Length: 190
Length: 190
DNA sequence: CGCGCCGTTGAGGCTCCTCAACCCGGGTGG
DNA sequence: CCACCCGGGTTGAGGAGCCTCAACGGCGCG
Image: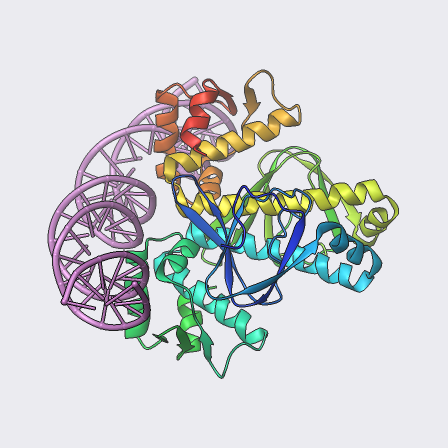
């Protein structure tokens, strides 16, 4: 647990090593994972101005992170135009990803959601050089995938089973390899 | 139709009068409405840098909008620090709203989704002074509510019927009044 | 060895979808 | 003027998809 929903913080967090998930949680335990955080990610974009974040940040493996005082962060942004540009670009990109998540949760069925989630995560890891050929570290528990796709762990298990049976992915002991990328894209849909 | 998904535009659009919806559409016709746009709203935050927006913007009543050349928009932002601040705040707020939409679509049932949608829209209209006591103009078609909540029009109709039967809302001829606000909040949940 | 956590599998049920029929109001043309 | 159609909303029947509940096996750990 890196950051809890009602915690006050004067710092901007930046993940250095390991993976984490950023989610919104309801009092009754239901929650929705918004994104998987990788090394280099800034932990919250959403509450850069409001120090009281509504987010629950949970590490899914041993992780380290750096705390940057909020004012230092903004000072850096103001000083370095290129960093500022990168920040704005990322801001917009995150918004786009969030909207696409809404589309997926609202309009796609279970198998498509799982396929998209795996595809997105795999592409992100490959982009950042965290993958060896097509295999990536996959420390997420079943309940994380369920919370990211709006399903139950039970049904998630059944969908994953199907993807493995059809030789689309190969998943064992915290490591996932995409065996049939075209097929995975096909299932994930447009 | 104000803006179609694959249209190229050098302008930033700003809604002046009327209401519109911003959505992401799939080739097969399924779509997810991300937000309802009111007068004063800037039409796309998501593609301020990439002129090719993936969004479908549809007016739901007679509307007028203003086109601002992209570079003029950024020039204005650079010149006026207070406008820039407001822009950043709104950017972050939109992201927060988007994430909450994902939570709703992923983890809430049909009635809760409908209730939240109506509640959010009503609050937004009230905030901006578009409401007389508790009644607001409600030009949305059934299919819009369905696309905003990830349901079918048929099921949306049944849920709305339930809300009317329980005297939570009163909806007739393009005008909606919230009769029992506490109950509506209760249904919408935390 | 016992225990707890995690994933798997199956049975049954509820929610929401699909399909279809129907009504209504508004336009359009005879 | 009425007949007709057409888009939008309503309602019901039946079914698919996903959830709930429960039992079980594997694994790490005390």
